[in-house]
Length: 248
Length: 248
Image (tube, rainbow over all chains, first blue to last red; front, side, top):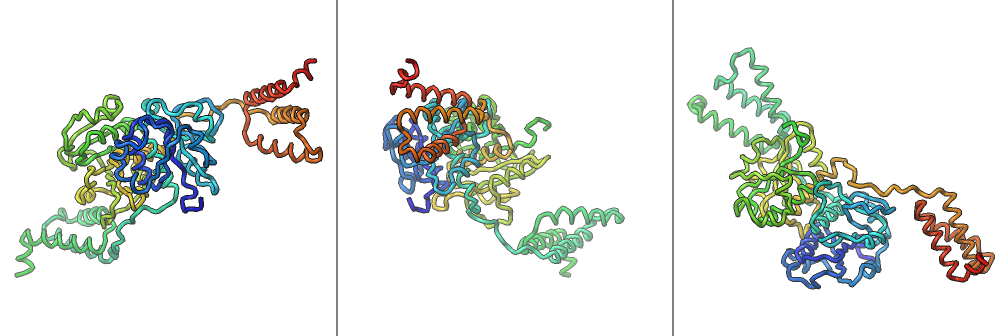
């Protein structure tokens, strides 16, 4: 293949049972940009209306599904195979977490496959034996069995996180307030507090003022937010009767 | 709190609709060691039999659920709040991925909460406004809406991955074969191949032998695997008639 997805791994569900899980797996794959779903001997055949219902459209808009009678056929065009399991198998092959696994699968020229076993008992030892490495998650040993679609989701998210892609949106880059603007805001606030009799006893004024400034300065104010806060100070001052003081 | 889970964040589902998603969220939370689930105004009330069915026992064995009429009440004891959203909000707050978010939540003394909105439209701007930062995933922009329980799953896995915990099991640490054992295995193999007439023409013998050794040496053989392979060589040789050669 010479598509931009050259190194995209196939997700291979071996003997999956519930269409709901197949559909949920397809949905979360497409959420994270994976589109090659392969089913080995799905219990209820294919297509499966329960899968459609849970896929939120992923099966119509991006994820391709192929079915195979046996695992070997699903791996015909694959060169690196990962078996996902939460159980030690006593097998002599590298055990990796999601980050190391996605690194291995991103090696140029590699056509990867990630195997997930069916709901009842996961992958068989025979399925694991053909894999290059084992992928496992740092799960709670007392409650280690993930839902099949969740297991696909955790891998898919790791795959995309490891692409080093930026988040889909950035923080709002509203212009920050200049420090001078901020200090004028502090002074405005303190002037009104002074009028309101807040700074008492007088010898504690510097301490009280600095406590307020230290708290407020941490908020990384934008220009707009400074204007809004000054409006709020003014409104409070007016509400207290300052209106008469300043208007009369 | 002075429990070992002092810094464990609460997972807060705001106006969740489907019990199935609440149960699935509880299951994947417990898979990754999170146990504090809070529901704000769940549409179908609580408890919810559909949640029980999908929780695979997590609701009976580890995850505690509290319900609240409004978000502020759910956050009473929390000091750092994260809002999960796939949509830019034009708000002046840091946008982080899962790794940075879990770092922030692991700061000593922090009692965290991670907010997830309901199935229909996610968190409201009012919900997001009380958060310290936004958590977003590097999703496919053309298909960005995660299932609620999957969104909880991706965060939960990131939380646990970031604990720096080892995988729940290590690669089998069967003793590796010594290099001398491995070379004896190669020699045994080559001796039988020689007898079988494999090395032809004779001047190519070194090249053919090294090609075989280069391939086999990559397999990182254990002692037991070397024994097994030597047994296999022997069996093949016997099958070819070598039995008569060596026994007679």
